[in-house]
Length: 227
Image (cartoon, rainbow, N blue to C red):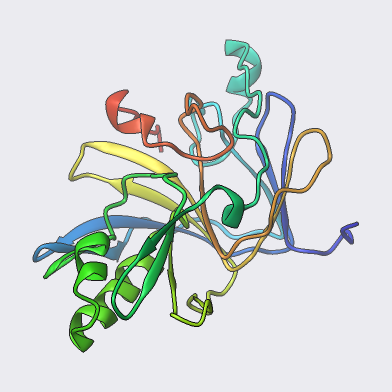
């Protein structure tokens, strides 16, 4: 049961995401940094206690809802299922570090580091530098696909403050999803609550096969928002 002032995102049936609780909203750009990637600042966005974010991909005032979902007859049926992360994630074993991977990829590419990918660095985690880099590669994955795990079973997560980031990916010539940080609750259109996670990416092109979550379809479809 959520209180009226609690920070949360509610998915409306065939409509937008309703965001409550004065959650900061920003735009950030995926930017190359050597063989890895960093965030750089995008356009400033208005802040509000409550706002509606487009999820049909056709808004004329992106990232906010303009009512386009009604005009196009948007079918926003949630099809991801609601299994828990630990139950669906694969377990990867390394010499000094383990990793969970649920294969939900938004193709943000932060799992790439200067000395290799998260999976490559996991294999050489007996090297202290590579272990540190493997943890960073997993922790900086916006979708929450990857989670570093200590040999004692402890999960290694950054302490993220609540925020929603509108992702732009000019290197791929596309607009990406909504990066939700800091354990913000997500309520489905049926009123049921999804597992609360520290990191996840919501679809905003409207055509993900993992709705409401991003599956990187925006890249193949060359989705560009209209802001």
